[in-house]
Image 1 (cartoon, rainbow, N blue to C red):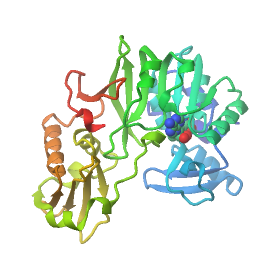
Image 2: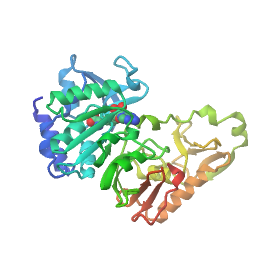
Image 3: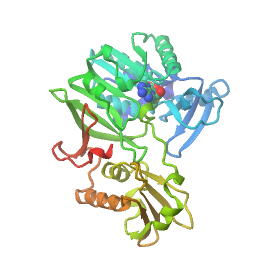
Image 4: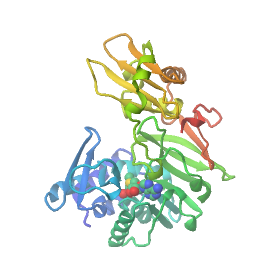
Length: 394
Ligand SMILES: C[S@@+](CC[C@H](N)C(=O)[O-])C[C@H]1O[C@@H](n2cnc3c(N)ncnc32)[C@H](O)[C@@H]1O
C-alpha cells in the first residue's frame, strides 16, 4: 500500500490538532487505513448523519477519498447477514475515524515492548498500528469469524502477521495471552467485563468506550488498574459512538410496549421549565450523557415532531414500564410533561439536572469511573471518593 498525499495530509492535520501522541505520527503515515478496508464500504459522515455506500471497483477515487477521510467507515451490517449496497439494520463492524483511533491510542499511553490485548479486531488496522508502534505482543479478539479471517489476511499483506488474531468472545478477554500491560476495546460496553481487569496487570491501563443505556453516545474511559488488581479507575476523556460489544447490544424500547391506552389515560400531567436544549437535545452534548449517568435503567427516545412540539420519551428499562413524555416547545416558557408508572422519570431527570447544575456542570476531564471485577461501577467527580453516579445506572 503506497502512502498518498491526502493520507499524509490527514495525518498532518491530526498531528497539528494535537491528536497524535509522541511517536505515533510515522506509524500512522506508514500504515494507511486503506490497506485494511474491504472493496465496499459505507462512509458515515458524522456531521450530517449521511451514510453512503462506496464501491472500489466502480468509484476508485471516491473509495480512496473515503479511506483517507476522517469519517468512520461501516464495513459490515447485521453481523454479515446483509447483502447489497443498501444500508442494513445494524452496523456491526467499521473502521473507526482516524482521529478517534489516534485519541484512544493516546489515552492508552502504550510503550514499546508492552503486551496489548485489543477487543474488536474489525479490519485489523488498529492492531496493525499497535504492532508497528512496537508493542511487544499484540493479541486482538474478534467475535465474527469472517471479519477475523479478513483482518488476519490484511495484517499478513502488510507484513504484520506477528499480530495474534483470535476469533472469540472478547467479553472473556483472552486468558492465554495474559497478563497484559494494556487492554483496549474498540466496541462499546455498559459493563466493563471482570475478565479484562483480571487479565490486565496492576498499574496497567484499560481504554474502552463506556456508557449507559440512556443514549447511544459513550465516553472513552482510560482506567488504571489499582495495585491490588481489584479495581480500576480513571477519567472520561471524550464522547464517542462505537458499535456495542455483541452481548451488550440494546434495541430501543418499542413504543407500544410502554404506552398502552390504559397508561395514557392514567398518566399524570405536569409542566417543566427545563428546555430541550439544556437537557437532552444533542447526541454529542454532555448534558444528555450526564442525565444517563444519574437516571438509572432508563432510555431516551425521540419521536417525530408534531404541531411545533418535539416529543421526547423516557422509558424505564426495569420491568416496571414506567414512562415519561415531554412535549418540548422552545418558544414557550414551559413544556407539558406526562408521567406514568412506579417511577416519575422526568422528576428524576429534573433532579439529576439540578444536581449537575449545582456542581458547576462537571463534564469530561472532571468525571471519572471506578469499576471492580464484579460489575460494580461508580461515577465520580474530580476524585474517586466523590461518588455521584448510581451503581445501578449501568
Ligand atoms: C468498531 S469495530 C472495531 C474497529 C477495529 N478496531 C479496526 O481497527 O478496524 C468493532 C468490532 O467489535 C467486534 N465485536 C463486537 N462484539 C465483540 C465481542 N464480544 N468480542 C470481540 N469482538 C466483538 C465487532 O464485530 C466489530 O468488528
